[in-house]
Image (cartoon, rainbow, N blue to C red):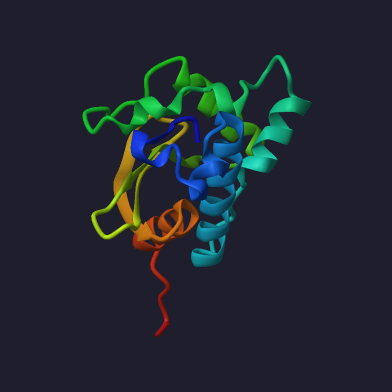
Length: 165
């Protein structure tokens, strides 16, 4: 996650404290998204952001820092081909991670709701790292009493539990 923004009204909300600092916001949102997708789609071999960061540190000079790749550009609905240098960075990262497809959280926005809840707008993009094509995108909306609850609800909107749950 490289882009986390909030309505100015939320900046003073105590529930938003974990998202005020950029690094803390990345860590918190990455953790919630990773936990959500791993638990909701266990049949996929996911490589969570924490592991991608380790891979990048071990391959310094070859891999770009996943937190500095600029994948927030993918939030634009007009982008169907990943632009360089993001494309080459993503391809290298996926080659080391052992995969072809990347699910990138392109952006996350928080806003207040009239009923006092918080809304999370999560933009996700599925990309083919080899061809550089954007295969799928979604803007998921979630609501909750806290930013964490709202983000969890947004992840659930994209990957609902199946099998009668």
